[in-house]
Image (cartoon, rainbow over all chains, first blue to last red; front, side):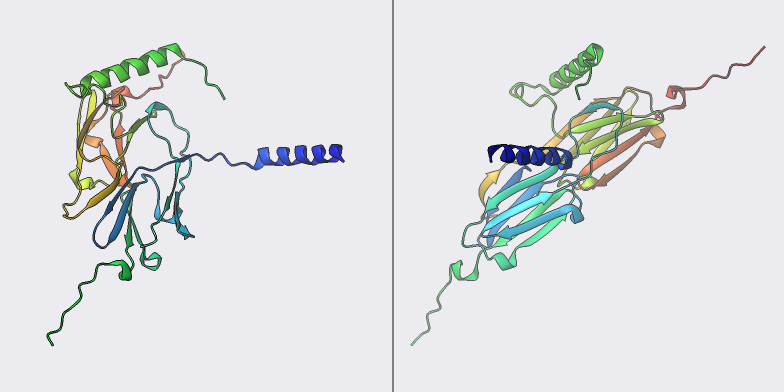
Length: 130
Length: 142
């Protein structure tokens, strides 16, 4: 029984090696600030085009994922950055209205508007004169 | 795949990094990262140089690019719109003015320099001056 297990495990290893894609992900730098209306998140993702950017929300976890193609080979005099993917996850506070989240990608910077749910906003209660 | 250690190239990188560091160093700024912000790549082909600069979230109209023989300087500023009543939760991106000067390893034709900004990356194309291009020399049979 044990021998059979070993054999299948090695098979799995060999197929895994050949199909693994060489992708690198980097954590994008973000700024997050809060206003009376909600949260604003801005992430630096240079080189990412809109169609390669994926933002998803599941069970209160926001995932930002951006991919870009590897650049063609070139003769580099110096190289301080490479085309990498960007990946980061955030746990959203419960007060965020998940249906009204807006995303905007401009100039390699992603801006996410995460409005607070209406019922959480401080309400001013009108006093009617009797 | 390990690249062979090219000692002269390593020394060249070191010299460039040291120059960059000393150029940016001012009192109080000596601990700034050596590479400088924004990050840059420079490629070289037979016909020219290409400088790529990572400047996300910048208005390209506010970038200033100047070339003179031997060096290229890019200056700009990343500004944050004014707003009141803001509580910061995380602040990782940088703001403010920046300026980087790059040594050009070849002579370029300054009239033909062009620049384009896409998705937060600035690409400056610097075609080489005719004198700097490699030339084939015809051998005539006497």
